[in-house]
Image 1: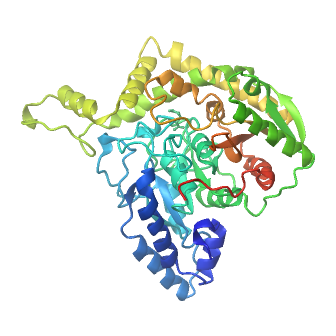
Image 2 (image 1 turned 135 degrees about the vertical axis):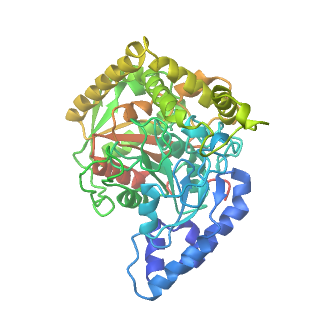
Image 3 (image 1 turned 180 degrees about the vertical axis):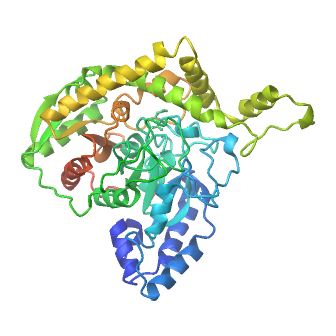
Length: 491
Ligand code: GLN
């Protein structure tokens, strides 16, 4: 069995039926991490107990105990998610060496399903960024071309997935942080509907937008992982009480008669790189030839998605990040005589040294937007426009089942190319942020390669809680994808 290229379900089946031990699987992927991650910098911490945990699972299987749907499957988890006993830092100096005493619900559910967590994955600091260059641990390299960024903020998750350093990874998506790196690294990445997946134990960035989701090598693996991590959680009042559908079992590539909306504004923006344009056009042709009907839809207010997103996200971040003060946990500046330091100086020095430049920029912007006298003009107004964007989507979904669009304007860019120009970096999120503002499920599916050999994904979006429709269209497209089975150079 070629473990590296096996799917999640193949690994789980083989472990459960004792064709291979969880310990062998763990050791195989640990070796890959050891030999390849030096080039990528995707892992920030490794789980030293992984082999012992795998052995314990093998013992349970030998005894005939029923183990979960993901028995022995090795996963990597983004730094944003709390993992008991493993560092969780949001890739920020302010949380340096922080080890949480509990697991995020997502991690807890994965472990209960039999997953072996191999380690934590690099990201942009506090998930603020689109290139993984704001990380305290340094940039992650794209496995297809190590001069390029892997995307962000879940860059480590996407890179580790693409290089098959683990069988599955988890990321978070506040404005595109799963879909954009999935597109840049040529893997599947899904952001579920807001409320599908518990945010308990996930470091909060922008609470009304944050959602965790899977990266995977194929659509079925992503669906299977979603089944495990989704569902109501009493610890997160924004999770839905709805049942979790059996997405992976219900996958169907028969999309005959389905209506696929193509967004006028995104296709005619004039911003698209020609390889991206061609990839989206190829996917439209593929959908047509499988019997889907293409309809034009329009979301005119999507034009405001980037400014509205950056207002909402920065405002919520400024509030969420006020808890990092160096008092109870995380980084604290050194003071010669702590008793003589006043609180303002204590906070100022600690936060000044602990946060990176981009995070500070957002805290300042967000604090300004929320300050009295400005709240109505900024945060409240952004909330109103946000509602209008959602209304336009709901109208569009009266005409179609799933919307198809580009994920980003271009394939992965070079490390260092955009980091000094925040506005250019923010504009990178032009096609992904509206999905989060409207709370919709969205995903990226690999469908092309640029002339320079970099992967390009297409984005699918569905109405609230209609993940199955979106996954089915992705499943159909996956079968027709010109890049199916193509592997990155790092191999
Ligand atoms: N690039 C966006 C930002 O910097 C999105 C990040 C995310 O989804 N976490 O806010």
